[in-house]
Structure formats: structure tokens, C-alpha cells
Length: 496
Image (cartoon, rainbow, N blue to C red):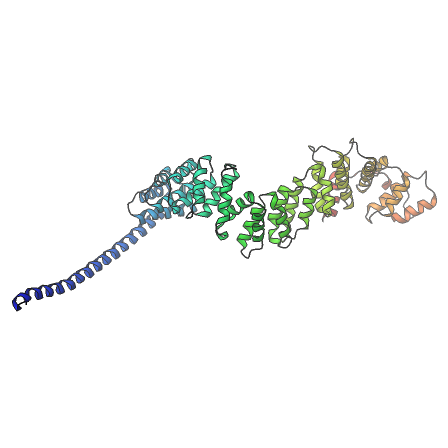
């Protein structure tokens, strides 16, 4: 049994513990309070320092700004270093010229222990376009393990791909924690440069793309799918052409445009969605520059006439000279678009084959039908001395003859064709212009030995000649107008 005297020390010790615990809590609270106050003061001081540096930066010239930024990069405090990057961004937006020291500092920070700093340093290397950026970023990516820092490095490699970066890009592409958009950009850039091993690398790339969530695949990833995938993969891209998200719809369209296997999918979808016209027309021009391709292009719905016109021009340039006439006819182009494409055949470096000659005949026919005799004569004359089929030669001679009459060069026209019946038919359908009476007067003079009084009367009536106006009038004498007059006359009727 414990005596009262023996229990007293235990009770006292217990009381001391109870007193100590509140004291400890009190001191702990005071310590935390002081720490918070110090942090508040330090934060305020740091904010003031950042503000002062920002104001100073505004006042400095380019060289001094570079010096200030380098000094900020060398500071131990993260906030100060991040301010340096912020000021660089501001200067790059205003086209400030940096001293070499800024680039050297960016290079050094690629090996910093802080991944956030490495990330911003890599971005800066890319934006400064340093001469050795490709080597720097390739080397940095080789040792990088943090996704936040790898992302701008991959973006840089997408801009400057190299064989040395292939293995590291593939490694990041296959990682679950990869910045997958940047990895896709780099992978597509390497594919564009044909740096992947088709046997070893392509299967890994396409399998990875099939595994990830479709929402994480950007335009570059879709292009890889289009290039490396099978028919099922292309169908998946085709289904994205009707996505509610405009960006993804455009990405899928641009992806399908990189392979001839995607042309039909694009054309089919563009037939229902005018917004896909550009991608579909680009694909047709790139992979189906044929008469059928032009026919498909001109039937696509569109929302911008100028964009359509540019596409037709580019398709026309892509189609072979020998197939251009066939393409124009098959597409059913109007006169303006037909002339736009066919005039290329008049270039001096174009070899005039039988098929090309038919295109030139068609061009001259269209120009004459549109009352542009100068251009019709030019096109028809391009076939002088060229061996063409007999029916085409008859057409060319007739076009040259009629064009000369429209240009008021009657005597030159008569040298080509002196058949009264042809002149009489032309007079009947000649436009009611001031040239019609001159044509009548010329005919009365040129054929006066071979026509009777009834024919003279008909010519006068059709040509609108008065009885008093004698065939021997001064107007019978042909005077060829100068070139300027001809051009101005043509321009007045050329407006389409």
C-alpha cells in the first residue's frame, strides 16, 4: 500500500506536465505567428523589388535591358528569375534586340536544377532562334526527365528535327506522363523529314496513337494516324470531320489531306460542309490533278468565291498541258474560268502537241465569242506553222478572219477569206456597232465586180447605209486603227 508521502511527487510531476503542454502550444502558436508575419513582410518586400525592377526595365535602352535580364537570371530567388523571363517575353513582343549574354544565359539554364527554369529556358532558346538551338535542345532532351521541361524541348525539335533526336522523341512519345501534344508535333516533324525507321518505329507510333484518348490527339497526331494508319484509322478521322468542335474538325481535315487515301473521305464530307472546302481542294490539287479532280473541285460547295477561284487556278497549274483542254471541258467551266486556265497554253515554253493545239483553238473560240478579237487573234496566231488537224485549221483561219474584221482590218481579213457568202453571213449577225456600216461599205467595194443590184441593196439595208452614201466614199479606204485604239475598244466590251 502506497503512503500519502510517496504519492505526492507523482502528483506534482503530473501537474508539471499539464503546465508544460499549454506552454509548448503557446510558444508554437507564437512561432508560427512570427513566421507568418516574416513571410508577409518578405512577400511585400519581394513584390516591391519586382515592381522596382519592372519600372527600371522600362527606362533602360536595349543593351541595358539585356544586362538587367541576365542579372535577374543569376539571382538565387525563383521569383526574381521568373521576372527575368517575364521581361524577356515583353521585349520579344516589342522586337527588342538582345545582347548575346541573354542567349548564353538561356543556354546555361537548360541544365538548371529547377524544372520550371529548364522549361522556360528551353522556350527562350526556341524564341531567340539561337544558331545552335537544334543541338542544344536535342542534348537537353536526352537528359530531361520532367514533362514540364520536356514540353518546350519537344516543341523546339518539332521546329528543328534531327536524326539525333529520334530515340528521345520516341521515348517521350511512349511515356504515359508525356506532354503528348508536343510529342506528336515532334514526331510528325520527324516523319516529314523521313527520319523514322519505318519497320521499327512506325508500328510503335501508330499503336500508341490507338491507345491514347482521342481527345488528347492534336493535329500532328492526326496527321501521323493518316500517314501510318490503316483504313479503319482513316474512317475514325473521317468521323471527326463532322465533330461539333471546329478545331478538331479542321485538324482531321488537314490530316486527311496529307495522304492520297484521304481524298475521297474529304471530298465526300466537303460536299456537305462548305467549311471543308480548303482542305478538300488542297488534297485534290496535291493528289488528283486530273480532269476528274478539277470536275470534283468545281462541284464542291464553298463560302468564299475568291478562295474557290484561287483553288481553280492552282488546280489548272497542276494539271498537265496535254490534259488541260479535257479538264476544262469535263468540268464545264464558264468562259471566264476556262480562259483563266487555257491562256497558260500560250506561254512560249509550252510545247504545242495535238492536245495542246485543241486547247488553243478552244481558247480562241471563247475569246471571240466574248467579243475580244485581239486576244482571239493572238491565240489563233499561236498555231501558225503548227501542224494541226484539218477541221481545227479551218476553225483557226475563220477565227483569225473574223477577229481582223472586228478589229477593222478588213483588207487583212479579205486576204484570208475572199468568199462573199461568208462575208454576207457575217454581216447578218454582225453586232449593231459603228463598225457594221464600215463592213458594208468595204463589202460593196471588195465585191463590186461579182454581186448584183439586189445583193447591193441587201448589203446597204443590213449595214444601215443611206442611199446617198456611195461605195466610193472615203470610208471605203481601209485605215488600220492603231494598237491603242484596238486595246481600248476591246477593253470596253471585255468586262465580265
